[in-house]
Length: 234
Image (cartoon, rainbow, N blue to C red; front, top):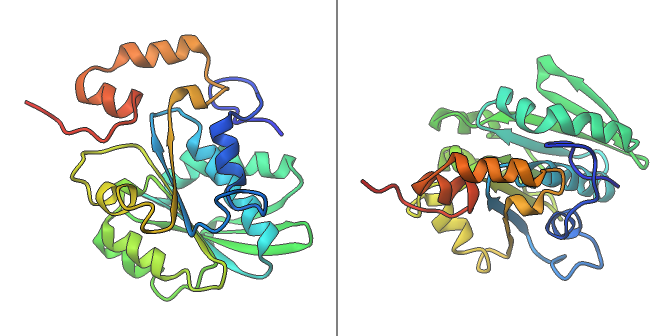
C-alpha cells in the first residue's frame, strides 16, 4: 500500500499514518476507542490517511449502512478529500459510484455495499441538513471550521451499534470550542488523539517542508507549521 500522492510520488505510509490507518483493527491497542481526532500542521498527510482509513473501516465492518462525510461545504469536501481519495479507492479495488445531484457515494468492496452522504457545515442552519439521518459513522473534515451545532448534530446521528466518529482539522486558537471539548478531553471522550507534523507525510519533500517553514512567522508558523493551537497576539 502506498501513501498519498500529495506533494510527490507514492511512498510507504509513515508510522503516524499507519497508526491512523489501523486504530480500529482487532490488533490495535486503540480498538476500543469511540473516536479518532487528528490535528496538526498543514500538508501533514492527515486528511488523506483519515479518509482512506474511514472507507476501509466502513467497508470492512458494515454492509447496507449509511455514513456521513462532512466538510465546511460540499465543494470543499470534494476538493480537499474526495478528488484524490476516490481514484485511490478505485485503484485499491473499491467500486465507487457517485451521484453528484444527490451528494451521494455508493461503495462496493469485499462483498459489502454502503452509502456515503455528503454534507456541508457552513453555518448554524446547516445542522438541519443532517438532522434525521441514521449513520454508522461520520467523518468531519476541518471540524474546527464548522459550527458546534452542526458537529454535535452529526455526532447525534451515529446511533448504529459499532459506529465511530472521525475528526480532522488544522489548529485555531486555544479557546476554540473544538480544542477544549475534543482535544483536551480526548481521554474522557474515549477518543484517540493524534498530532501530525509535516514529517508525518513521506510524500512531502524536505525542500517543500523548508519552504513552508520560511513562509510563515508568528502565530501562523505555530499553527500551520508546528500544529499548535496558539492565540493571535498584537
